[in-house]
Image 1 (tube, rainbow, N blue to C red):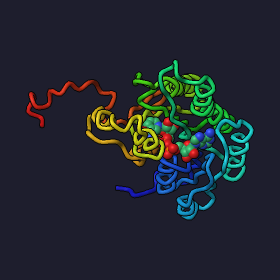
Image 2: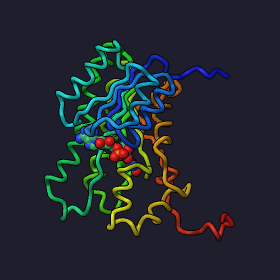
Image 3: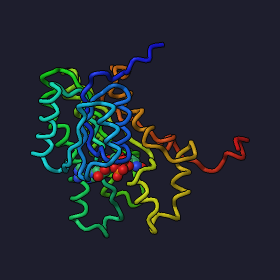
Image 4: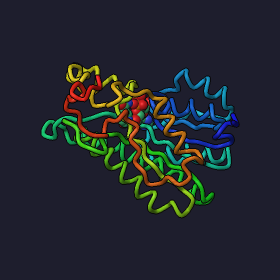
Amino acid sequence: MSDAKRLEGKVMLITGAASGIGLACAERFVREGAVVAGLDVTPRPDAWSAIEKAAPGSTYTVGDVRDEAGQNAWAAEARARHGRIDSIVTAAGVAGGGPVHLIPTEEWQRVQDINLKGTFLSVKAVLGAMLEQRSGTIITVASVEGLEGAEGGSTYNASKGGVILLTKNLAMDYSRMGIRANCICPGFIDTPLFRSVIDSPALGETKDAIRDQHKIGRFGRPEEIAGAAFFLASDDSSFVTGHALPVDGGYVAGHRYGHTKLMGLE
Ligand SMILES: NC(=O)c1ccc[n+]([C@@H]2O[C@H](COP(=O)([O-])OP(=O)(O)OC[C@H]3O[C@@H](n4cnc5c(N)ncnc54)[C@H](O)[C@@H]3O)[C@@H](O)[C@H]2O)c1
């Protein structure tokens, strides 16, 4: 079996690259031979030293996904430096929610602006290059909470549902131009964002119930989402476009009613 690096020479852009899922994608992609350009609103984390060392030419840019000019400049710089853009992973995102009657309208707007409009702007920034090349893979990051409702999900779920349909429409419009678009819908993944929610006093006591929704019986790891992103970026997924892929330990597989003992499956 060949141990060739599967993304050798690919130029891959990642938003939310400082932490969690975006960082895990950067680490996986450089292991597979890609050069990565990360963007995140937070200062460059130490973890990026190893990424830049493993894949010279990789860059980290501090920027906000709500800033259209900034995202365009980031994508243009990557293209000028490497001559092409093969993939983008849009992992920048924030949590947010609560029952609608308690949510300030500005908070609703902030979550839509980062999660949904930010995704739109990221994709828009790379489409020109991908259209000229007639190739590219767009990988958005939504959530299981974009596929179904969750108590108090509101703002977050609406933003992620929007990301899923935006992605399906990208596939509609651009697949014949050689550009595939797919969306990853993670279950609950152990990242700083997850911990800020699950360890909050408000949600702490429901942690076990949330874990139980994952039929595998545990929360996910960022590298498990990076594995799916790798598949969607690689030629192994050459016939996959317009798909919303749950990577969720079975979270959206169905409902559990506690019949495992009855079935002898404990
Ligand atoms: N962790 C989970 O359980 C989970 C589940 C489903 C979906 N997701 C989604 O996965 C994505 C990554 O989340 P994560 O869990 O790795 O969280 P994370 O907080 O570890 O990483 C998110 C990154 O996005 C960056 N970011 C936030 N706002 C930004 C902005 N305006 N501009 C640029 N960067 C910005 C943050 O600085 C951070 O580095 C998010 O879109 C999140 O909604 C996460």
